[in-house]
Structure formats: C-alpha cells, structure tokens
Image 1 (spheres, one colour):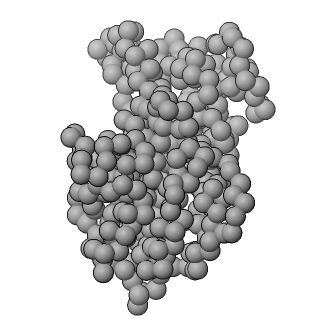
Image 2 (cartoon, helix red, strand yellow; image 1 turned 30 degrees about the vertical axis):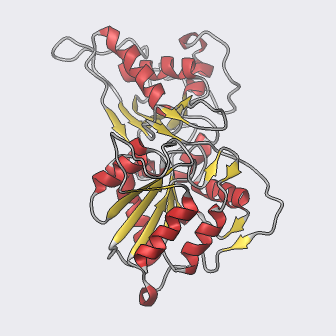
Image 3 (tube, one colour; image 1 turned 135 degrees about the horizontal axis):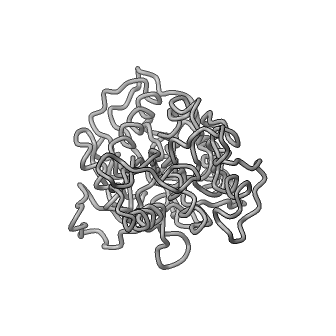
Amino acid sequence: MWTRSGHVRHSVHCARHVFPGATRQIGARNASRTAVVLDIDGVVTRGATAVPGAAEALRRLRQQQIPFVFMTNGGGVTEKKKAEELCSLLGVDGIDADRMLLSHTPFRPLAERFREKRVLLVGSKDTAEVAESYGFDVGNMAVTSSQIVKALPEIYPWPVTHCTLPPVDVNAADAPPIEAVLIFYWPSDWAMELQVVSDVLAGGRPLGVGTTGTNGTGVQCAELWSSNPDFLWQAGYPVPRFGTGAFVECLQALWKPFGRSPLEVQECGKPYAVQFQAARKLLSQLAQHDDFERIYMIGDNPAADVRGANSAGDPWRSILVCTGVYQGGVGSNDKEDPAWRVEEHLPDAVESILRMSG
C-alpha cells in the first residue's frame, strides 16, 4: 500500500487563520449530520508544504459547523505534537489533539491490558514519548531493542544508536518474558530491530533459541501488533519510500525459513475497520451525536483511504484527491479501489461536500 506519512516541522511566517471555537464541541441544536475525515499527507500537506487552499478549505468546514477530524497512517509523535506541527505548517490556530487519529492511537488501550506484562516497543522519532503518554511503563516493563542490546551486546554485535534508557537483561533468571511486540512506527535501524524482534517472537531462554509446539514446529511466543500496514509512503522524494508494512514483510520473510508457523499480526491503521471506528468515535464526541447521514473520507491513497471507507459502508463515502499517491486526475478512478468521487484537490472536495450538504 502507498500512503504519505511524512512528519514536518515548518515555521510559517504569515498571518494565521483562527478556527473560532475549534476546540469547542458543536452544540446539538446546530448539529450537522455531515462529517469529514481527512488524511493529512497528500491531502492537506505534501512533504513540508501545505497543499494550496488547504487552510481555507478547513476554515470553510468550520464556518459551516461541519465536524472534521484528521486520520493519518503517520505516527511517531504524540497526537498533541502532530496537531501543533499541522497548525504551524498551515499557519492556523485551533487544531488540537482531540482531532488527531494517528496510526498508533488505537494502541492507547493496550497500556492497561499489558500494564503488568513486559512488551517491546518498536519505532523511531518520539516512540518512547508516545508510549509513555499512553500509559506504558517505558524503560521498565515497556522496553526497546536498544535497551536489550545495551545489556546483551552479542545479541546484535554491530554498532547501534546511543540509548539513554537503562540496559535490560532479558536473559536474566528473574526477567519476565516479553509478551507482545508493538510496532508504533517504522524503525530507523531495521537490521537491529529485525534481529531483536525475531528473537523475541521466537522466545526461549536465551532469547531467540525458540520453543516448539505440539506439532514440532516453532511457535510465536509473543503477540505482534503493527500500527501501519503501508508498504510504501511518499515524502518529499519523488519516489515512494519503504514504510512499516515493508518492515513487517521483512520480518515475515526472516521468520519463514525456520519452519515455524506463520506470524500472526494484529494490524491497525487504514484501511482496517478499527481505525474507521475510532474516527467515527472522535466525530461523535466532537458533534455530541452519532446520527450522521454522511461521513466523507478525503484521501489520496486508494488502497488505504478509499478501501477503508468503502469497506466501512454507510454512512461513509470515499473522496479521492489527486495531490498525493493518486495522480490519475478528475474523470479517472482507481481500478482496484474506486472512490465514490474523485476531485482535483482538497478545496474542490470541500466545496463539493458543502454543495451536497446544502
């Protein structure tokens, strides 16, 4: 799958739009039965640049009191920081964390589920900060591959990025087993992560020796959660880059030759239903009702945005824009995942929604 998951920090030196009452819930008396969910990269932004007219399009939605939230397969930062980045890039105020659904946002409830169990965190950027904001005990019961390598350098005998967290000896006699691997975001050191994650999934002591099931084959000893299925994503470079989905594919390929049972992966992110259910919940909280006649998903990725919205069924409708992954132009459509409607860019998509909602 292709998506755009670029993360930008960009100062905008211009007059800033303010979305009046952007953090205030929409009163039931003026409740709109139309709602909008927007992808970010390839729809609102492209790399470190705002899509022309994007800020004005969002202002139009606010003006008409149509609730909207952002749903991206990007991550690696907290919802609060992502909202701040988007405000800075667009030159607007009033977009807060309550409107942000990142690829790993559904991991938040897992902090309570694994509260007394050890898990392995995989990612880059601010993954540890994100996990901590969700309630994980980072550095102790929620550990990183770097912490393991710091304690057991022979598990990965090559140079690694400096780790500020304390070492964790997972082979110690009293060490609790790692019961889940949570891929929050694509890692920066794939070689190290692939080795350590493979060892964790194989289990045993020393870690990686593996355990055998009743049928004589190696078994998966830890749950594997991935927050983003996208194989490729588009940043500023003209050609898409490998994403988290590619990392999971590599993991599957490394697992297979050992004659083990296939890896079971719990997937979050678009196009999976859990993500669209979470987006509707955010909209319901914002609008103070769940009686939506239409929820429009505006995205640039047929395999993620369009497929997810189409699969969600009523009241969802997919709108594909041509400013990101999809470049077919108005009048065309994706063959594998055709959108309900194709528009040139976000401003046109918003104006079409306003006309249909009039």
